[in-house]
Length: 356
Image (cartoon, rainbow, N blue to C red; front, side):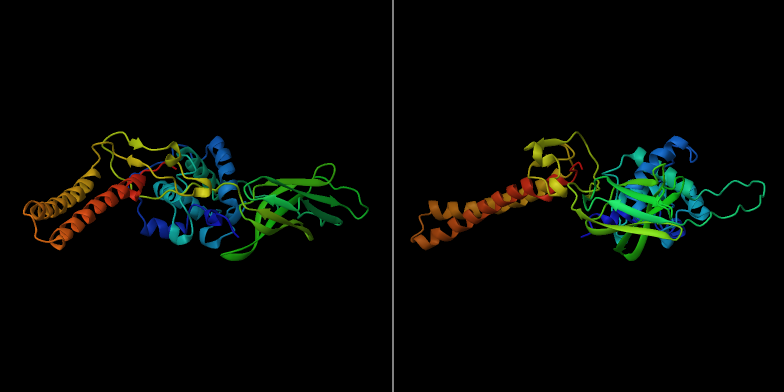
């Protein structure tokens, strides 16, 4: 079963479509990248975020998905021209495209760093003197063997080791080995997950954090040499991103909270929190207005039924049937009031601003 793989669709769709058809709503409107697009430190930090959240689908160079090719100068120019749009999509997601938002799992700084790194993938190479095209690399003859632990777990770092030897069995150093992962999600094929150079022992080592579970095949490739290894990946211990849903409402004061601490956070794997009474805007929250309206309607019903019951009791109704109906009505109204109070405590109203 694929776990959280929709998150790997990346942060953006086709840049031209976004720029033409979508305008970010407040508070994203007009936001600018706090980093310079050429900030090397921000790009280095963003590369780490990209490798964990986006590389699985978009690939090392960002060109694995044709409809979201980060490696083109056109995409980079669109990103630089409309940073608020792309930051909005990274933050809120696009569920119609199978992509969740990352504002609950990545800080604003991390999201901007990731976008800064993505911009570098599409940066055009600076003009320079024309030089003769160097000859291609000499073909490699020998054997390539990929080794990996047969079991692993999604969300945990695993190590892939590709050993390169020549025809006589001697290790070959200084060769770049590319690593791929076979996937069958939205589209089937091999996605590049990284590369590494062989050392003096002929071994190229890549550390990778898988985001899928189940049997997964990894491939190491160098020129015409190729080797594969299958790893049985278990389910992750925690979700890869923090889901964020609800309605953003104005706050008139600090939050008022009554209940156990466990109700302030989602449970394991994003399970719903326990119940509690939470007033997101404080005691002056405007959400109390509809609550007050419901209580006013209930009070009107209670007062009317209570008067009918009181009349039947004080007037000395000649038979029990004449007294029974008002008693039943009064009991129903009281139970309805208890039900409304219970819904106030455990209903969605108390979870509008649940921190995630």
